[in-house]
View (tube, rainbow, N blue to C red):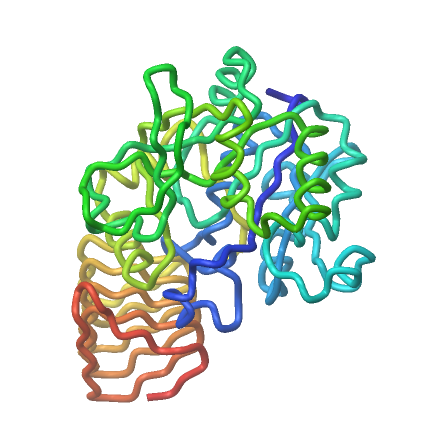
Length: 376
């Protein structure tokens, strides 16, 4: 797949208002996950592991933390003279100023379409960040080239559509793996072909589609374009069979962090041959005192653990003082948990401080979320 395909990471989505508590100051892409990663690490690593050496991130807003995280791309081996990693904003571009009243990822892509036009790769792969998985895109590209499809959509057949993937597109697929209709998951049926919103097509044809859609004003989002394209283009489906989580709500975010504590999910996502890369930060080792008790948890470097931590995710530089009990929690970077604090089913954003003796208890489906820089 090397040098055959350019990657486009699409950060513009209209469905993710249910995760606003965690994305007031950042996009979903740069939301911390699994003690040391950011959500974008998965799709970015998937592209690199599949041989893509030219990747463009099409940001929408609040992307300062994203650019700080990905930097030059060196941690993903994308700091290079030819190709590499690029982050684009729609702000103050010619096409964005022309269509300043238009919303949607199609107009976001149009704003920096000159990048795609200058690429030399024959194919383009477009993917979001909130579909968390560990996938080999090179197999999907190989299938696309053999199939003769104009567009190939990657999907997963799931049996839990009543609980997960609410609002995601569903695909009606015939016996020849052609998509004949696109619907929406309303949580009525357990079995569904869930679109991963990942598309493969020829780069030049993608450019033509963007210009055509804008000139006609027929669609603002790629999902809507795919729904219409099945009527007049050869749109096929490629099935992915591994672990998949759509992080489009606080509930889903909380669930994936808990699932990462299971060997089955962590082995597939984090410890397979296809490594998930992230920005390396050198920290001192975590200190565990004699009073510390840690069970089935991820604890990042730079922490001080004096209390009890069970079934939880702790990011860097978290201080859990003596007598504190943390269960089923996600605690982001640089938080302080004072003496005799009790936390259960709670998510702490960065730099939260909770004072001695306090107690917070959420529901396993509806955890309490404490915003960044809060003091309780």
